[in-house]
Image (cartoon, rainbow, N blue to C red; front, side):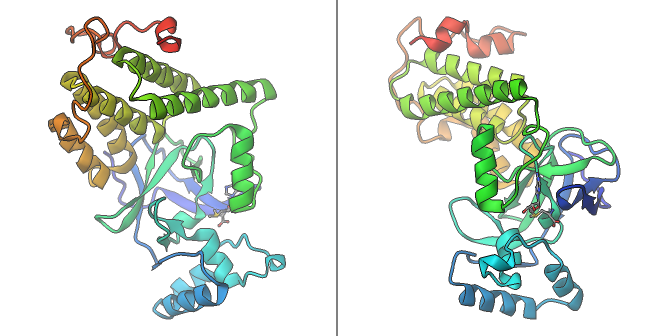
Length: 329
Ligand SMILES: C[S@@+](CC[C@H](N)C(=O)[O-])C[C@H]1O[C@@H](n2cnc3c(N)ncnc32)[C@H](O)[C@@H]1O
């Protein structure tokens, strides 16, 4: 992984979006663009305004003059009509939740300036071990191109994305994906819906599928994600699901390959020091550490894809995938 020493970006006005991060050099896929400690942490931003205000004031009290100035200069999505005081509105706009399952978050000065795109070129994650937030390039970012992340954790069709961004962030997204011509936009929506349907089927039906059918669904999902041009955390997540399914059937060889692919993608999105990377590395070495290891009986003969043939990893990995296999079962 490449790590830059000087910041490879500047903070500048971006037409229609307020300020944003603009690359000052070409940034290669997988590069750590930013590593930032929070200015302060908050247990939650969902509490009565007077309580939240008191917590913010206590945190601001510990900061330098420059840091206080930088805080009050941040974007505030809560206009006067909302009745939310600016000092509170700034926290509500910019505090980033560390983990979707807990309300705790942090205020980051540079990260607060990163704008959203529905097909972003960067990915952010909170690293609990280092106490820092990192941003990595998901693809090559050209000099003077804007660096964007997704504010949405799961791929959704355009209308659902727009509604979410309007409700939670008070803006109408005009990113490249949302601005596609109607026909291309509809095709993209169909692909994203197909991925959601497969994820749902895999989530609900993993106990009732035979192994070949589950692999066929996964194969179809990766194919659709590739056509859609998705390279974000849905890729390592999908490989991890594939790993779990292979583990359920005690297919150690395939499980290891899926874990390796999940690991490789996570490293490029979060770096070697990510706790998730450390966890995945453990599974690559010992797939049988997974709780669901061989949870189910082995697949009946004829339903397990064939063993590995040298030099044909992809063919072997997915077995003999046909469109019939993906829809049948
Ligand atoms: C966390 S701030 C990002 C930085 C902000 N642009 C600034 O000037 O500090 C989030 C706000 O940025 C703007 N923004 C982010 N992504 C956008 C997008 N794709 N289209 C339009 N506005 C966007 C919206 O006003 C949103 O409420």
